[in-house]
Image 1 (cartoon, helix red, strand yellow):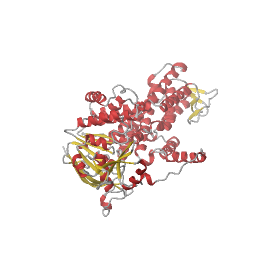
Image 2: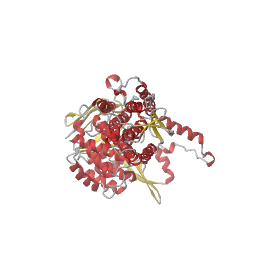
Image 3: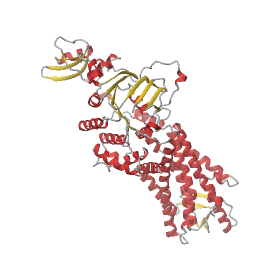
Image 4: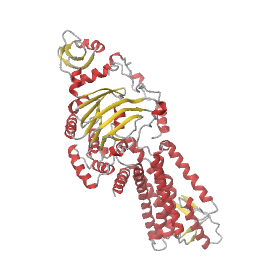
Length: 292
Length: 342
C-alpha cells in the first residue's frame, strides 16, 4: 500500500499556484500535514481525494494513476473535508445510511458498520435527531463517522478536530492511532498538538512548497538546543516579541515566563529546554518567510 | 441491483430532506388550496365563451391536469430546484466526489428525488379530484378516466420539469437567479407556439394543454355545434349560467400515449445532459500546464503575511460613530439579491 506523489502542482484560474513541485511517498501510518493557513494543505488534500485534478505531476495509488483512473482509489477512500456540512433535516442515522449507499455499501453491512461507528463517535443517543439540531462538534463527529464508513485504506481528514471539545479531541486522536496500521491516514491541521499526538511522519508546507518531510523525532532534533526559557518583567514582553520568535508565554507572580526559539541564547539568564513540535513548526515556518 | 440501491438512497435522502422543510409545507398547503379552488369553482376550465363540462371523472381529471400543467409546470421548478446547490453549499458534494458515485447516477438520483416531490403534489391533486367527483359529481367515479390524464400528461411533464431543475443546477450560470428568470420566460415562450399552431404537434405538446383542449373543444362542438372552439383556463372568474356539455375525456390510444411516453425519454436525455455538465464538485478548473509551459515559479499566495500584532494600531471607536445606516444595509441586501445563490 503506497501513495506516490511526483512533482504535483495546482494552478488556479487567477494564475496562482496553490501547490508546486510537490513530491512525496506515503506508506501506512499517520502523516501529519502542517502548515499555516493558505499553505496549500487543502489544495493537496483535494487532489489526493480525487476532487480536483492536478495541473501538473502524477499521483499514484499502488502504481495505478489516480488522475487518469480515480475510481481505483475512490473505492477505498475516506474523506472528511474542512468545511463539512450536512442535510439539516435528516437524522444522523439517515445521513450515514445515505453516505453508505453512495459509497456502494450494501444495506446489511452498512447498518452494522453505522451502528459500530455511532458508538465510536459517541452519537448513539443522538442518532435519530435531526442533524440541524447538532452542535458543531457533533456534526464533526458525523463527518468522521462517514469518512470511516467504507473502512478506507486511505483516510484523508482535513482539520478534523475543529469544533471538538478537549475530551472528544483526545478520543479522536486515539481513534486515529487505533485505525493506523495497515492503512494510510493523512491528517491536515494547523493544530500542532493533534499531529504531535498521532503522526508517525510529518510534512511541513508553506506557500505551496514542501518545507520538510521527516519523523517527529527528526524534526525535534532540528531545533534541539534552540529553545530557551526564562522569566522577564511583563513590561519587557512587547520589546522581546519584536526581537525574537516567542512560542509560548505563561504568567507568573514575578513576571512572564517566555519560551523563545532562537539559534543562540537570547538572554544571559535564558535556559535551554527540550523542544516541542510547536517550536519546530514556528522555527521552520519563520525561517522560510515572515513570522507566522 | 447496486445501482438501484444507490439511486433509492439518494432519492430518499433528498426527498426526506426537502419534505421536512417549512417551504415544502407551504407548497403543500398551496397545492391543497389549488385542489380546493378547483372543486369550488374558483379555477374554471371552459370552452369560450361559456361552455363547461359536466362534473364527471374525465372532466375533473382534465381540470386537475390543467392545474398541474400550469401551476406545477411553472412554479414546481422553483420548488424542486436547489438539491444540487445544497450539495455544493454544504460540502456534502465534496464527500460525494470522493466516492465511486458516477455523474449519471448522481444526476439520476437528483432527478428521481425532484420527480418524487412533484409526484406527491400530483397525488394530492388526484385525491382532491376524487373528492370533488364524489362530492359534487353528476356521475359515479370512474377512477381511470380521472387518473389517466394525470398519469399520462402530468407525470411526463413533471419528469421534464424535474430534469430541467437538475440541468439548470449543473450549469454554473443557470444555477443562480438568472436561471430562475430564464425558466420563468422559457415556460411561457415554449408554451405558446403549440397552443397557437393550426395543426396538433403531439411531440411539442409537453404540457398537454393542446391534447386537453382539442378533446374538450370536440366534446363542446358535439353538444353545441355553434361553439367556436378555444380553451379557457381562468382563475377567480366564475361563469354564470354556463352551457353544460358532457365530456368523455381523451381516447387513450397508442398514438396518444406514445408521444406522452416520449416526454419521459426527453426527461432522461435532459438528465444525461445534466450529467455531462456536472463538474462533480470540482472547485476549480484545471489549467493545462502545456498552455503555460513557460511559467514555473510559485505565485505569491492569496493570503498575505501577517504583520505582527504589536505593530498594528486599532483606532478606538466611540459611540458617536456607531449608528444604524439604512442606506448601507439596503445596498448590501441588494448586492446579495443580485448575486443570487450559486
